[in-house]
Length: 398
Length: 241
Image (cartoon, rainbow over the protein chains, first blue to last red):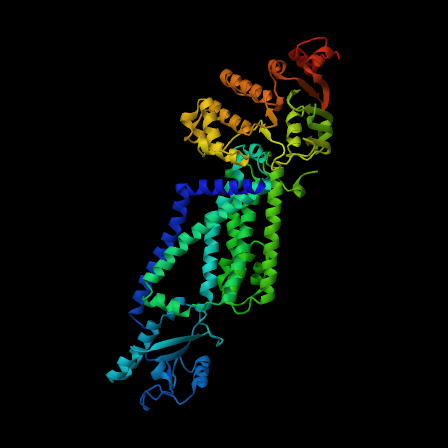
């Protein structure tokens, strides 16, 4: 009987939410906003492509040509090998170092090395670099063949950080960032919905009638499952238009540039899925707990702001998370319970999280999520007929 | 006759305040039992503890020989609490069907339509509950309470706020269920209802049972006075028992 009651709760909560126009308005607005931002950034990057004006007479350009395709008296041509050329970039002796490999005629690929102070995902677009090379080469050569050549090869952009590390990490962070964005949307769109759905029984004085028909455990968990199903619908509503948009604009230089660098690493995906699931469980636990201790939706809604701020707090310190060595604040946010989900996601994305740290962080979040959901069920049962805010026992005056 | 409810040495403290000191009584299967007392005498607390909303400080509260579990199908309980409401933003029919499914009805929609016709609300079935008047909403709440023909029906001030028509409807429904063997525990301040409907009753005062037995036994203990007079005497301090 209990499994039937559980499925009844799931069905009821799911159907009544999905029938609400407000549900569809809220989940459709977000993808529309993101697509709008995407189109604006595409237009903006399109205008940037028109002028690689950063290259000027003072730009120190070095070219190694192992293929022999360039004339030996070509300007910028050096006899240094690839490693020495990269070292020149690191030392500041060269701003741009082009390496034309011996198999150039087959691969049609030229490697570019340059210093990058910060990650700029839109500057990995090959056409920008190609235009830079085109402009640079054409300003020094009248040979039409060479100018034509610049339009017919791919440039593998190898940005280096100021410390000489490869900064072209865009491909690695795309997948973790997608999980982070989905998690963020989940918090924003569903946090208050979770909270309201739990407080509803108390606010409408349904608690006693419902809890003599179904256990608190099945009621709360049923609501949670229903909300998670709605969350999946929301994610699909977000992801499907995105995939369609990417497919339609797959030939756009920016889109194809990003796609070509995306690194699909199964281990990374599994890590991110684990982190995402336990993080969602923590958010659900927090929101349902607030719903269980507050008597009305109005009072419950006062708590949702602080919860969201606590969860997204690490985003305010994004630059700290991008640093190779995590500082004290980053370490603190990684293990502080409420900031841990996004802190761990950021560090996973930027590759600054070791496996032991990842395991400790995940275990901490999982234990916390389980504990909060367990407390929520007990609190809801015991306070179903308490129509005031429940104070933790420690705070009660003796 | 078998007992459907057994309450043994029940004590309930809220912090330093003792609401129920030591209460023991039984409700027999198929009887209508009155739980009587002034406001604050612990009637609702007793029912809530019986249904597991409160953990008793001490004592045992059993339904059909065990603590109440809403998902144990062996005993069906219908409860109309003092604080009552339903999903206001949902349709009338959806409210009834949801509770019907939770209570294990085979065809909750069919039952709901039949009930709505009986209480003359069938034209409102697709309206949101909040659009109904207070009295109409009470009829829906009553439907939720009795829909599974419970073995034990617990009514906490069921006629509070009811107009005479709804009150008569409620009485009819209680009598119908009683005839089918349902035991009823009823909290009420209307002593005429108790005299008319109840087989036995308990009168609570200061956390203990002041009087307990059949209605005639209670009257006999109080020199044949009416229940209303007994109530006034007990709580007005004129009781000579």
